[in-house]
Length: 177
Image (tube, rainbow, N blue to C red; front, side, top):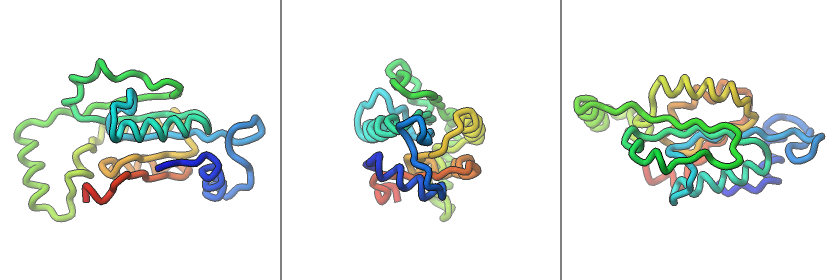
């Protein structure tokens, strides 16, 4: 999602049906971006985290950014390497609940026998995290939401209720499909 700040401003102006300019001066509307991603974007260790951090860094130039990240329970062993991203107004990281062996087996069977189901879309979803996401969005009051990965698709109902543009940014979307 290589964002150019000027083109993003014009796109948001169109999406908001306004001629009022966005960002950078006191008379302009500030872009408050809420960025949702898998795994913490900071420190940018590489791959997806690096791409997400680059996007967040560009968005910070346009206004405040809130980050909501989700990762598997197995990532808790790396928790001490995560740190609050600099210049981010709000950051909330969430761990998925560990699955029992039985739940893992059921998920494996579901992937094989339920045609409308897709592991990549289902693995990162939990109703409790969806509720936390709604609370964080309401607290931050964004006027732009970026959903960074296909595995976050089940959280769309939480972001669609906001009356602001939503950008779905999946790099190499064909890989998981």
